[in-house]
Image (cartoon, rainbow, N blue to C red; front, side, top):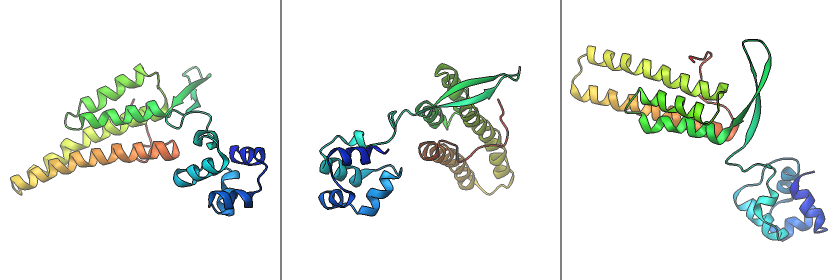
Length: 193
C-alpha cells in the first residue's frame, strides 16, 4: 500500500475528498497511490491537506540523496559477490571529474581514488572512469587534428574550449541520468579497468 493511501485512509478521506481539500486532481492522487512519486507542489499540497510531513508521503525508505542497491558482481572464481551501490557516492565519483577537466590525468585518478575510498568498486564506477579514460585518449587526437588543419589560433582555441565543454557535458549528463534512472547516459560497451 502506498504511503499516500495509508495517510488518506488514516484520516478517513476518500480520494475525491482529498482532491477537494488539496486542490489536486483525483487522477493525480490515483497515480500517486499506484506508485508514482509525488513531487514539488503536489507533494506540498497533499502533505498540507493530510497534515503530515512531506517526507512521510515519499515512497523511498532511504533518503533520495543516498539510495543504495545491491549489485551482483562475478568474481574470477565465478562465485557471486554482492556489492552495494550507493548512488550518491557514484554521483560524487562522477562529479569529481568535473573539478579536473582542464588537467586530464587527474580527471581519471581522482575518481579512481574515490572509487576505492568510498568502496564503490562496481560496474557504474568503473564505467565512469572508463568514459573519462576514453575522453582523455580522444581529446589530444582531436586537438592534434585541429592543429594539422592549420586554420589559425582562433580555431585552435575554439577546439580546446569545445573539447573541455564536451567533457563537462558528458559528466553533467551522466550525473543527471544517475539521479533519474540509476545508470549512465554515456557509457562504453566495455570497461577499461
